[in-house]
Every structure is written in C-alpha cells, then in structure tokens.
Image 1 (cartoon, rainbow, N blue to C red):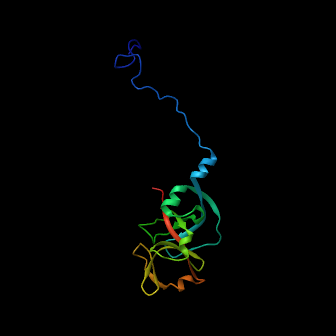
Image 2 (image 1 turned 135 degrees about the horizontal axis):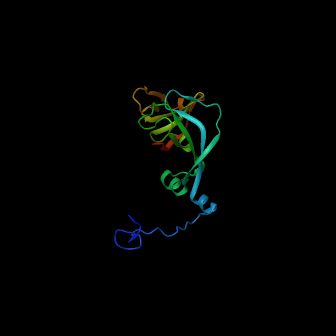
Length: 176
C-alpha cells in the first residue's frame, strides 16, 4: 500500500504475461486479391418471397467478395454467371427471410434440370420460389411457408413473355 516492495505477487519485478511482440502484417497486393477473390455485384432489386416485387430498374449498389476457387469448385460457375439480390417477404421462411442476400446463378434459368429455389419473373414482378419438376412436363411452384399455396404450370408456359425463370439460388446470407 505504500508503493514499496515487489510489484508482482509471484515475487518478481517482471510481469508474468508479457506484451506481445510487435505484430507484422503482410498486405496482399490488389492483383493477388483479385486473382483469389471475385466481386459479385449486388443489385438494388428484391425478389419477393410472397406475391411479387415490382422491378422498375436495376442498378449495382455494392458487391461481395467470394473466393474464385469456391465459385469454381463448389458452384461449378464463373463470376460472370452470378449476381446478388435481396429477399423481400415471408413466403420462403424458414429457408429465406426478409433481408437475406441471395446469390443467383443466371445459367440455371434457361433449363430447369434439378429441383431447387429459383428467382422467377411473373409479369413485372420478381419472385423467389421453390420449383419442382413433375411428370407430364409440369412445374410445381411453391413457397416454404405453408401459408402460401403452390401452383402448377406446364413447362412450355414457363417460357412465355409473362413468366421467365431468371436463375437458381445457390447461396444465401443473412444478418444474425
């Protein structure tokens, strides 16, 4: 209490835990980062998990970085095949929630070969829905939220001016 005597309880004049050595950081060059990461554009468009979000115009507002290796190996895609949009509405809960960001592979809009979650355009609205192939050249378009009723279309109707499959959702992210 007087300020005299040994400073530390173990009887030494040195602290038991030493301050870490000065950290050295390596900075990656912009070239090496762009070799390893791709910036995928985020558009100011929302796909409605509900009854449809009207799209008046689309504009890139941001981008997210994804490892090129992950895009190639996991998604079997290239960065040019991909874009990001937000989810609006609750028809796809519990899988997708309002505000989620979804990564869409635009190649998978041309021909639905596997069941999955897709972004579709109906008229002027974008929707995010689960699509299942059915016998008889039909598609079942449904929501994961049971409060929303599914509907069916013939595949040839799915390629009309009023309805188009935009792409398959291959990743989603959300704030916790």
